[in-house]
Image 1 (cartoon, rainbow, N blue to C red):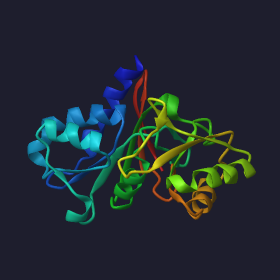
Image 2 (cartoon, helix red, strand yellow):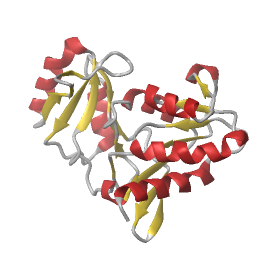
Image 3 (tube, rainbow, N blue to C red):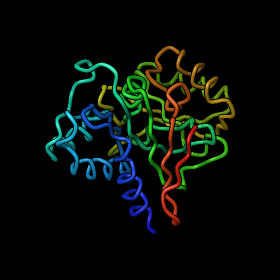
Length: 223
């Protein structure tokens, strides 16, 4: 199966975790787009969704699914999102689509996090994929130096030759050269650096379930 077919497979499989009559949290990215497309088939069974990005909001609304502001709702039953990497304990690297801050907010508001990914995203130790970090622009160079002190190399993510601006008006650093053996400690430490808005390691808001797309079908991992 192609990677695109695997994404469609897990996007469809995630529908069984959507709770009828309750708002669903929706992430961002190419795999989540497959889930959003599948969700349209049951849009009459849910009040709507809370979205983690402008791009997902536009896709949901185009399919006739109402999107609520996170402040309009209380606890969300389930959050469906992808991952750039996921380890054996359900900790993830996320933020390849630059939506990590809002993704972490919606994940924290949800009772259950269901990760949907293809098997290429499964790793033993986080860090092969660059770690995204959303930063306030004035702190960029200092945060780059702090990562260098840890042995990492951080670069500002560019779009059309200029720093990418997130939905929150901030910039993204992509950090390479790290092996994150203890995701909880890493997330806690980097989150406290002045100027860091969000680090793209999801350990406090880790996945409860991962639906992994393989050539043999969907493998369900429970953490």
